[in-house]
Length: 294
Image 1 (cartoon, one colour):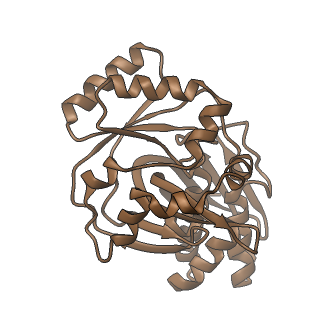
Image 2: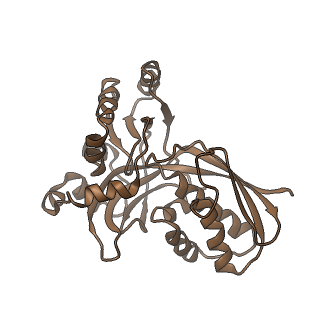
């Protein structure tokens, strides 16, 4: 058996996240800005016996069967094409799990992209997006890199330009947050009157063709999940204070948690903050936006 493809699957940050309400299909309408960052998993593909799907992961805590989004992506593409080719996907994890960074969704999208090409299918983008959405709400975004205004349940994507250099410091707390639990908590607290007054919502809705005014965005950034996660895990508030004390220009939680990120417009300040936070025992990931499509 030989390796026929390798690729990287990049994480994302939610640059703000508002939950607008529960939909009839059980999902929630959201408004957010998604941005790929240069923190990534690595995937390697090998051909194996026909009809077989194998997932080998560097993290032994992750399932290797149908619960794994990589496995589901292989099966979805095989089902859509009628192909019976076997594949082993070896996954080297660097994106923390249960962190709001979309690692599983990024891995699934990478599988769709690579196998669509390697198996000679030439499936159009629209069809790939349909398959991606069937795997998970965030998966369509990861079919390309960049920055997008995201709405619907996560499938309505409008890519925009990002004109500013910025540095992020991600802090990974020692706990994971279940997305289902987080949505259950937020769903009962949605206040549409307050949402309509949100400076963040007004700013995002005002973006037509971009570019985003980056400093305005970070001046009003908010995530509806952060208060409920901080209530359940008070350590999140302590980490936020630690980030603010390093001089971050803004800070926010990504996705439904648990990762917090600090925003720095100055590279030297970000470097100093990295050193200080690591001395304090924090698990820190310095990263930057991934702007160029890949």
